[in-house]
Amino acid sequence: MEKSETTELDPKPPIPEQNEGMVNLYTNSLSIDWTLYDVRIKFGHLTFAGQPPKLVIEGKAGVTMAWAEAKALRDSLSDLVARYESVNGEIIPPKLAPAN
Image (cartoon, rainbow, N blue to C red; front, side, top):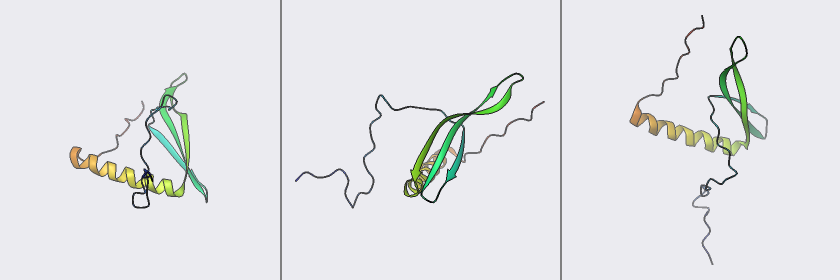
């Protein structure tokens, strides 16, 4: 009998390889909505548009996941940020200069 890649003792599935159909996006803005059943994260890009230029958020993608995956994402990001900050110092969100 072949050994399965995931077992009850190892609940993390293997990380999939990136394939040619995967989309890579940049985001610097997000919003979160939820229902009783799932969580939706909308990713956007804060940029200037129009004349005169105004800050706008261009929607780029949305990801909907079950609450269990949202909790796993939270835990993974918390761990990642803690490890990053232990090496590089606290991440301080930038402040936007006031407009003229």
